Length: 577
Image (cartoon, rainbow, N blue to C red; front, side, top):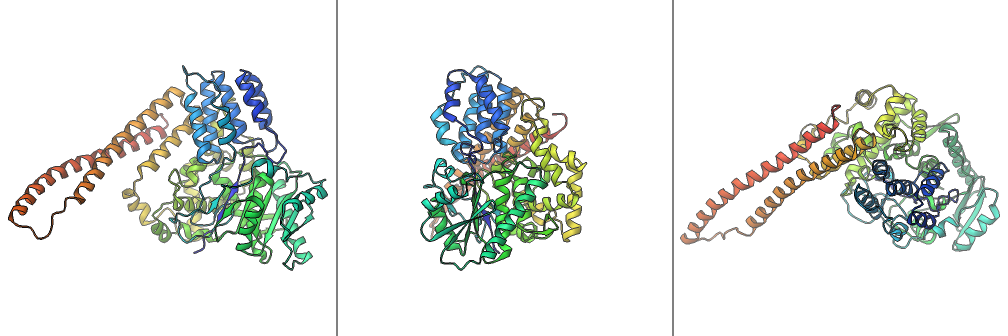
């Protein structure tokens, strides 16, 4: 089965299409001078700009609040950044460090301005995001979600400044072409078509009519996105590289962006220079890959904080689509359907998350959590795709996107309306429980099976308890509660300490069992024993029986820790919390 993975390179806003300029050095200097009010005002102004909703701008809001000792509001903003933006490990660590340092009684100076300048350059998961199923941005085909291979390397990627220099207004076609020709190898040629610059290989026999058709299809999709979802239009050219093969795509990635991609890439997009690269010029059906990439570039003008399930769900919807008059509609059945079948779920050892779980995922959890569980991510992409198909049939996608765009920044009035789980009841008329029931019934009727009814879901999932995943999920739920304003910082810290205590008990017992098992492997007696050795063996067996009792106690401690974690999760999820 083919597996497609897309890659999206997102920046923190420093060079967000030259439509928003974030002078990080100046804002850092203002913070160091104690001029937090100026920083707060400037960051909020930037946030209202096109491409202004991004991790970097929100960081300056959170930091200015912290330095003014608005610890609760600052904490909510830091939680919002962690929940709403895809970031690499370095940026995640930096934001968590800043959040932990923002506590009453602690000094709140600007923590290493140079760290901010370097560690938040490209806040995206540089994990090689290889996931079973067509996922993410920019296509990788791999044969199994457990494969651990580098699908993309950003080690030598061009800096933001160099990429931003390739962006030009629509009234600068000659300047834009001259810039492209200044760095493109001689094998490429570029032409302007409407709002797109199409780059192709000279040795390919491209028909002018075919190129115009591709540009026309992309322009039609662009206008649909803008009008259908009431997005602010871009006044910049979008550069589209049309390649004839995967080898050509690999070469272009190296020559254009200085990144290395895997052997089976189908396409990718980079926000920093507004570019799309894809294998799409021979087969008209592959225009869907470019529709997918185009969505990711356009939506971030108004909703840089769009949740993963919605962003990837809609991108997947339009990558398998058709036109009905001037409306682009996702196909009701796509190849992702197989990733939700019980056979496939059993093969990869995964279950389908509930809608409540899916809506609670931050980008990191959506991509498979701290251990980059690509099998889990594949299921998340498939479920998001089919949930969008369901919402499309309900006719609520436009209202949902409007709600995402219009939600107020956290900590201004009430933070409750920033949570993804609160968006859907307002546009569907159903709470999450009722929506889950309706979606499940719709799915079963439409596809003749229930993705939530599989042997793994019913029994194996109980044996497959992943303490780390459950703990991460609980921490996310707790952060969501805090962002909703339902708990204060003291309550948050108290429950986080409780989680840490449970984790300590679990990991201590698990370590004891591992040590015992390791010891047992080194104490197997030889097969040809004499009587003396046999006697020693009996003594060892008696000792082993005693040790087995200890193992049994340790396993009970592990089970108690699991039970405690589940009870705490139920308490946190309860209305009384």
